[in-house]
Length: 230
Length: 228
Image (cartoon, rainbow over all chains, first blue to last red):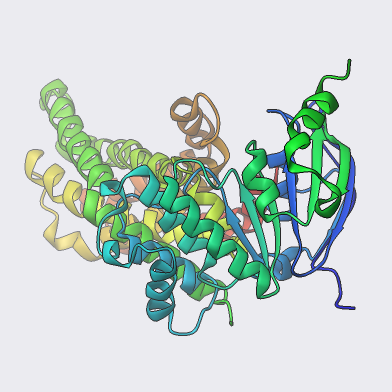
């Protein structure tokens, strides 16, 4: 069996007196996708930022960590992480160079093409619509072919075509061996990609199930019941 | 994949920042206009019968540099947090010290560009001949700029996510700028009053020591400011 792609072991993170995460653990294998649902403030983004190496947990550990994690991780957020004064190509090429990708310009063009925005390569990001900016942002995150993809509400701002292109790209990455952690409020989009489904509430997993055991028709009701028990 | 080393990554970041500033020119124009306006106000408030130009000009020059530089320093990280581009930098497999060095290098170019505009402007406005001291004055300007930029870049990163970033940056930075401003103004005054370069060597050593200590300390401290 291949070694796990991600191991999160009992991590806790506090901001002042508020506990954002309290003893969260999970393991994710290559080819797997963990969809995390939860209300605002549940700790979903904090969890992603810790796995990405952007935040240090107060206790617990994440593997991989440090530079190894950052080489492997591709982070997609609802914020684009782009520079408006650079073109789409310059943004993606800059990322490619930071990751040490061979032939950074060619890799950037290929990544833009995979998201269907190659014809906007020389357009300044500030001149692109929100949806196209999000596609360029995703191209930026995929340019180094990450083996761990962290997605924080990635469908925000995308139109139907953009959402379909992103889903195809994520399925392609997952099939190629990447592990995906997807944070979303949209249950249908989460279930479409997931192999594991978790509900995070008040910094803890309220449930953690295999996707194969979940009925998509009844899951929304179960999710609501988990958050607001009778 | 072979991620860039410390200096290569710093150069990538500096080049990116300079490209953005070259295109927008927003920080440079703000600083340049501030420098010209401030020197004009000082000029009209100046009584030439009470204070000689050679005594006033160094103070004016370094007050202008300090505050004009602050405009660029604030925007340095402001551009990164607007759409969380900073996360894209921090999640990349590069030494986080490279982010500081790259930002500091871009800020240094920015401050030197403002100086290149403001020094002749002050020289003309106060009728102070500068050509015979251009070399030593450029040396002082570069040494002072390195110190200001090292401290300012660190505090810019620390304050950018705060609600009062524009207030906090000068409040935190200015006390650290005092040794640089004193050394730069004193040495500039000596040069303008016709003293030999050997007389300002002590002040130059102060500036160089400040630069060494603060570039090193700020580079080491920078990753911690991001993690916490």
